Amino acid sequence: MVKPSVLVTRRWPAAVEAQLAENYDTVLNTGDKPMSPADIRDALKRYDAVLPTVTDTLNAEALDVDGAQTKIIANYGVGYSHICEPSARELGMTVTNTPDVLSECTADIAMTLLLMVARRAGEGERELRSGNWTGWRPTHLVGTKVSGKTLGIIGFGRIGQQMARRAHHGFGMKIVVQNRSRVAPELLQQCNATQVDSVDELLPQCDFVSLHCPGGAANRNLINARRLNLMKPDAFLINAARGEVIDEWALIQALMFEMIGGAALDVFDGEPRISPDLLQCDNLVMLPHLGSATREAREAMGFRVLDNLGDFFAGRAPRDRVI
Ligand code: 8YV
Image (cartoon, rainbow, N blue to C red; front, side):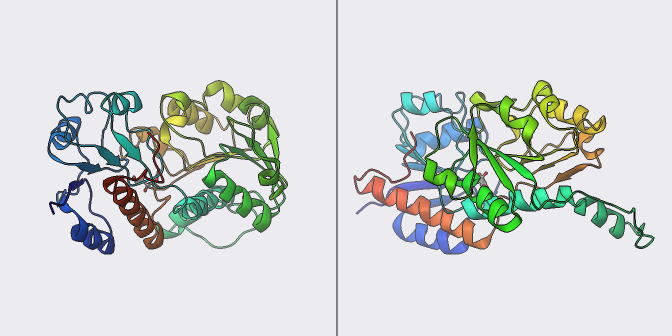
């Protein structure tokens, strides 16, 4: 029997690549580089399935193909705002993602960011490594207490819920939630959270605001200059969702003029390009998109892609179909 042909756009954990090779006629992008729209167009003409990541451009230009051979785009990752939904629909392609398996690890990174920025851990490490630490003193690198404070969560999906659990059960934080749809009361009760109707209502009440909503056009610049102004002047903004959710220039202004206490980012608009102005902000913690970067999550994401492919090629509905 002829095995379906599959293009994997980046290198994956070895155990997943091995299993993929058993079941499919697999081609790995051994350059391990992001794919351009032209690369993607070419791939869509040649392979039955394309398995991209967030670093590949699957915009309208990339999906503008005649006679595509690809029937399924099985994304390695939960966020799929890098895939142009109308174009994928027009081509009749199935798109799947990898929810659940990375929620805990991504929430762990969001909590790491929160703690790092509140306790000035990044500043402290920079000082120590540069040989500038002159020793303990009562007023040195004094940060903000986390326990008992109010955390606003924008986007109460799986990752937002994991973040709420950590913050509430681990740090006794009071949780306020904003979500595009009404959250089931039992989910809110699990961490004694209250839901508010809008982002504008949430921001002024919170000491920390953590973003867990999808990226893409709908949420581009959701946190803009006006909304940064609604935050308490000593509050912190955390982003482990997508870079475009924050208007980066407005954030730079807010940090430089100390209109908020600080920010901590795992994702950036146009990453891996980082604005040089961000590098100048001391009250900012930055990580290189580490949300799902654990051995466990990255393997589980790969096996989840395999489950979705298995279902699809066996004629069943893949469990994680999003388009
Ligand atoms: C992934 C993520 O590692 O799953 C997501 O949406 O943001 C990441 O943590 C990345 O997207 C891989 O495609």
